Every structure is written in C-alpha cells, then in structure tokens.
Image (cartoon, rainbow, N blue to C red; front, side, top):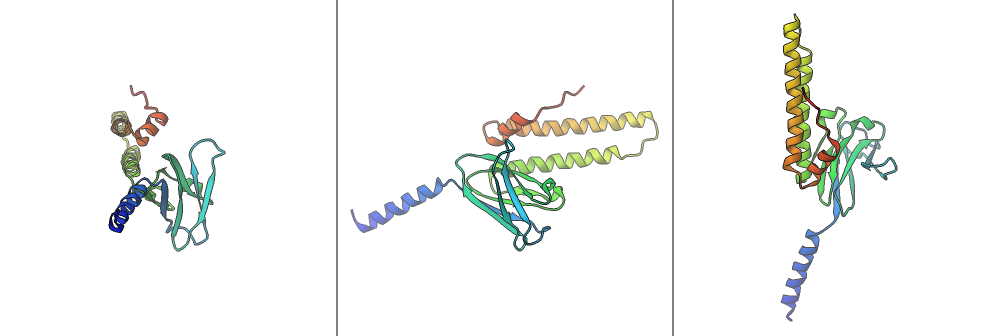
Length: 188
C-alpha cells in the first residue's frame, strides 16, 4: 500500500468518524444578563436530573459535552428560572438565546430545534391574537358572544397547529414529545 493510499484512507476514515460524533455544542446568547450571571441547563424529567452550570461572559455562554440520545432540555438563568428556553439536546451545534422577556427567547441550529422554534413562534402569535381579542370593548351580549366565538376559533387554530406539527414529526423526537405531553382540549 502506498503512502498516498494510506493517507487517503485515513482521511476518509476520519471524516466518517467525525460525521458520527456524539458531541454537542451550545452557543448561547444572554445579552440582557450581566457578566458572571449563572446559566443552568437541565434535562427534563424527574427533579433529580443533573443541572450543568456556566457563566455569562460578554453576553454569551456555552455548554458542550457528549450525548448519544436526543433529550428535551431547559436552559435558564439561575436567578430568573421563568426565563427558560426549552430545546432538544442532540449531537450537533445548537444556538440558544435567552432574553429578559420570553417572546425574545430562541433556539436554532438543528432540524428538531428549528421545528420546535417555528411551533413556539406560531403559538405565540396566536396567543397574542387571543389577548388582543379578549381586550376588545364589548357593548352588548351579541358582541360578547362574537368575541367568545373568535377566541374559541383562535384556540382551535392553536390546537390544530400543535397537532399538525406532531403529525408531521410523528417519527422524530419533536412529534414524540408533543404526543406524549400535549392533551388536545375537547371543543364543543
């Protein structure tokens, strides 16, 4: 075997192994938080799951490690756990943005997380419509009934959006997570 053939096989072997890596890298942005603030990552499950911590430096944070499965996780500032960003941890590079207001939280970088973010964006938009509709002035019972019907319609759209995402992703962790955790309301 020539040195050229050996080097070629080595490069191909290295590429194949790197494609099957089980490492993850989370590139985080926390521009609303101060240097030294603690950011936590926890896998969803029982309350005893391991919490990994890092600190914000220059509006950024990072986590890296090894995983051989896809897990549903949460990243949150230790001093503001309500600012949680939920995402699918998988062997890949993932971007997580934590903000002081939940509507600015984002996750991206993989097919599962992009799908999850798209669902969250859709639900947030419909939810904003529900709030706007509920704040409309009502002069009489007819208008009140119209408003109730509009809100009911928006709730149905929200549920349909969730169920549609679950159906489209039935064979992957996004659909499996929704099917396991979402109970569709019984509309009348």
